[in-house]
Image 1: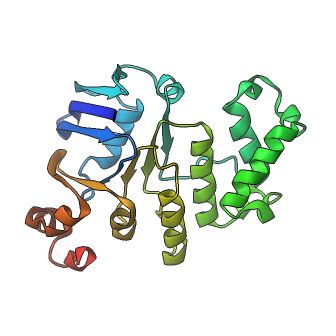
Image 2 (image 1 turned 120 degrees about the vertical axis):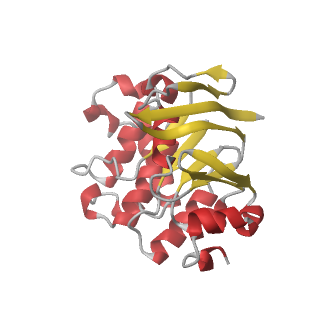
Length: 252
């Protein structure tokens, strides 16, 4: 089943053409990685898909609904979830309070005052369950700003999941993480709901080739390759345009 259809997206900033006719589809359950050198248009593409930027041309369909001109909030209500390169947690609140707020905003509790959320036993039980899954229950009373950066990334992705997204977009989810933190996050992303389609923008080749079922390579705002990880590994254009000789070992 088709979750997302992108048709001829173009975006320019002044005389700089950042996206030039990008088109692709995403199926339910598919994990799509979008890679390319700096300036290829990857984050701009996510910002257009998310509604933060408007395209000059092209259309976007989420489960056959045209969302091209809908607001970011409207897209979120339709099931589009997004995490960013920089964590977007409430740093002065505890880990538990961040999850309670996330749960409250995704239910009828969003109309209640924050103070009441902590008294909701069902929400508390769900928060405990989710925090145990990502192995952060022992740090539930720590402020979000005081836990490790890798743990913050995991918590942010959990909060994105709490909105029950029908599609998730992750922008550089392992940015700033150690090798072991990245491996742990890869394992947890790979364990996300199997039916939820995921778009990942990343420079982390371990992440990309570890979980992607399909990879799109952007260069100068255009799609230069689109295929399975095996096909991308063997594509000479990817080596020459994106990876280069010195980075070729990353695809070996």
